[in-house]
Image 1 (cartoon, rainbow, N blue to C red):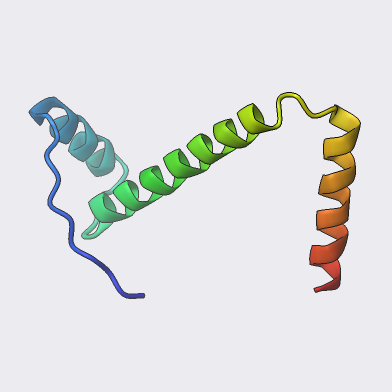
Image 2: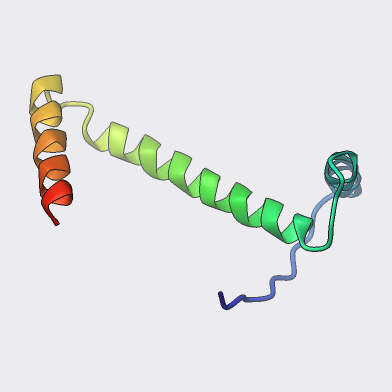
Length: 78
């Protein structure tokens, strides 16, 4: 997997808390990067989900269920 280097700034408190958290779990080299990667992905998923819910708030539940069912059928065939 290719990687991109980020330079980010966090509070000293956040840094200390996260490093202690990782160390208590037997922290190894690369754990900080993995943690940040997973946190970013989880947050993007959460935001995307919230946006989708807001966009579909006026759609009837049955209509959404039908659309989801069609998408799952298509994915299973593919």
